[in-house]
Length: 415
Ligand SMILES: *[C@@H]1O[C@H](CO)[C@@H](O)[C@H](O)[C@H]1NC(C)=O
Ligand SMILES: *[C@@H]1O[C@H](CO)[C@@H](O)[C@H](O)[C@H]1NC(C)=O
Ligand SMILES: *[C@@H]1O[C@H](CO)[C@@H](O)[C@H](O)[C@H]1NC(C)=O
Ligand SMILES: *[C@@H]1O[C@H](CO)[C@@H](O)[C@H](O)[C@H]1NC(C)=O
Image 1 (cartoon, rainbow, N blue to C red):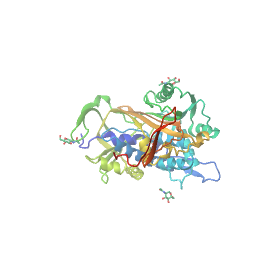
Image 2 (image 1 turned 120 degrees about the vertical axis):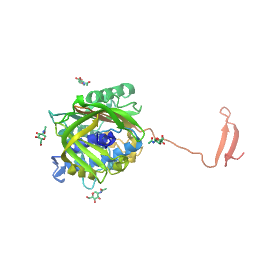
Image 3 (image 1 turned 90 degrees about the vertical axis):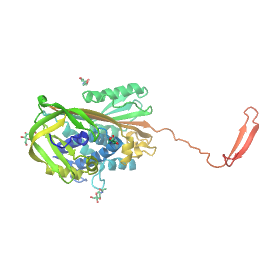
Image 4 (image 1 turned 60 degrees about the vertical axis):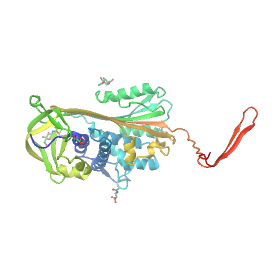
């Protein structure tokens, strides 16, 4: 066995991002509106999505040190793109810039058309790959959506709409969770652990992915072996092994080794193994340019012994704080402008949740993820009065209106 140790954390975070940058790149989106620039290439969308993926990864890794990290950046990007259909003004700008779009280079319409094209491309039937990506919205019975929002949700984000009685939050939560569970082949069982009582609208994105390795591992060769979680901690894992020719790159500059494993569909998973003790340095260098440099450097090479653990990991995140860190703030506050949804500026995002699951074994990979955004009515204007300077006090007896005490408090700490 090579001296290099397998640490899956990084590879996993990248897996679904990597999938898209391979799968979604080749064609151009033609924008029909004559007044706009003629083309938005998928490359602009993919490079913004990759930038967002790495930024989100860094935040998740920071918040969950020493834990596995797994998420689908694509699912979060699409869900936020969908939400932005209903946002206006600086609330809208924050979401799009948070998604790493440069609004001097790309317009809002082009972004939505980019996602529309991406969804169509990803859902194209492919007999080498099971991939489905979709959106849905669950709408409070009395909530009047603007026709434009309903249409754009349907046309651009292929969203189904389900009337929902949020008056019964548990029933609404089951309805949404069951929908997601069904669309992810049972892999995401409980997207929403709780649903805020003020919820009137929930947007959902889901992804399901299953693919087979072009060169499969032989289960007869899988054996228990050591995996070094840290300097101090070693665990036993089922370690798969293979002798194959596949894209490989030893990156001396960043101190890591890359192996790309290809699926029968020609999509691929990129596994990145930092040198011992170099994980954090590498994480800091995760930027789209690094990924591009890796893609250009990978060369088919014979690997005589590849050892890769078989694993199955899951996650469940609340993304509110992390999105706030990434500059998407207004949606969570009473300054939110989501008036594109109903025409009224009285909605606010209460939760952004994300769940992901990934299984890697001898046959291939199965992964699923979902993102849920719950939107509630803004509480009525909150009133705050703070007695933090000298004040007066009068105590009045109700029946007789007699003042039994009257005073002035200039310093409450004085006896
Ligand atoms: C956005 O694009 C413009 C024009 O290409 C460029 O000058 C600017 O630096 C970019 N902004 C960011 C934040 O990348
Ligand atoms: C999902 O729902 C469809 C239609 O109701 C059903 O045919 C299918 O068996 C369900 N799949 C799962 C995994 O529950
Ligand atoms: C490893 O063990 C040493 C001594 O038992 C301890 O001081 C150190 O904090 C441990 N390091 C980690 C990363 O757990
Ligand atoms: C994958 O790529 C190979 C080599 O370029 C090609 O022969 C094969 O048809 C491709 N398979 C699929 C499913 O696209």
